[in-house]
Image 1: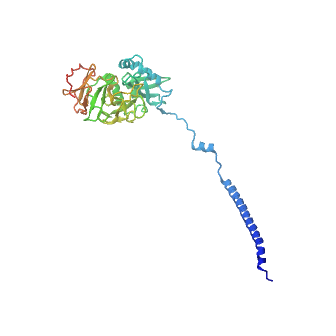
Image 2: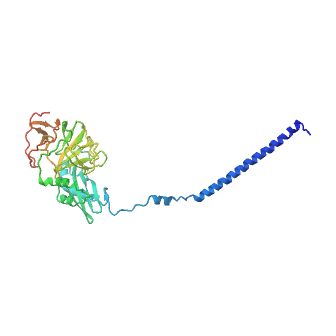
Length: 379
């Protein structure tokens, strides 16, 4: 029997509702199955996971370091002879520093330990008595060696009795073998005497003219001008004084002859290791105005370098010194350079002729009588 079209239309809403209910049920069932499957995966993964223990992990990757039996120290702790070095420097160099600075009360010496071997009880370093606060002068430098004996230290300064003996006895951790001859000759030059022919060039490029200026301090010259580059006047070993700040410090260059050249007020000081050998013409720094030892005021003039010559006994008198093709002379406050009758006084340009190839006969360190300078200086 045929149903009318209206009859078919009457059952469509009901069929649609049944289909909708069926689809919803399928979705719900599918979501439930997904949840069950996810729980199963998590459970299985957890069975194979390695538990994380932070403290054990850190202990395994960063084990606690064990102290070593021997160590070479470079700091200034209570094990260093700081007090003994200062006392020795003031006792042996204090009077000379008082005369140089014109004062009675001196600042504490600035001591730096270059190398220390705690296990063997040795120390080597540099010391400088700085000028009083506000004074534009170079410090009084010294090198020292110290050897521990029980609870005390024996300290010897370069140029003093006992220093050379300690240099020869010191372990290589404190005084390497290639430094020993330089330190021995430097200390012995004070008593053996030497000629005034230095065999050095002036501390800037050959062929350049720099202005020679008066400096605050006995037997010290100041140079400025040219390209400003301060160069080693001969091969030697480098030692630092006062600050170890990068680009600063005073330098002492000990040469094979036993003489030493000193450089102060430089900027951009070369980062050469202490005791290292530099060759003639090696860069040492640039002329500057900073005076890093003690509480000295910066220089008020143009950038310059303070220059002096030393042996173990202290600064060499300028009179008779032959350097850079010139012979230096000093009479009272008057300083000038002479070359074959050509004279240049302080305040005028000085041409660097380099190292003379024929050295004149040596003379005693004791200054000779100063010749009278000409009334008219040649510039």
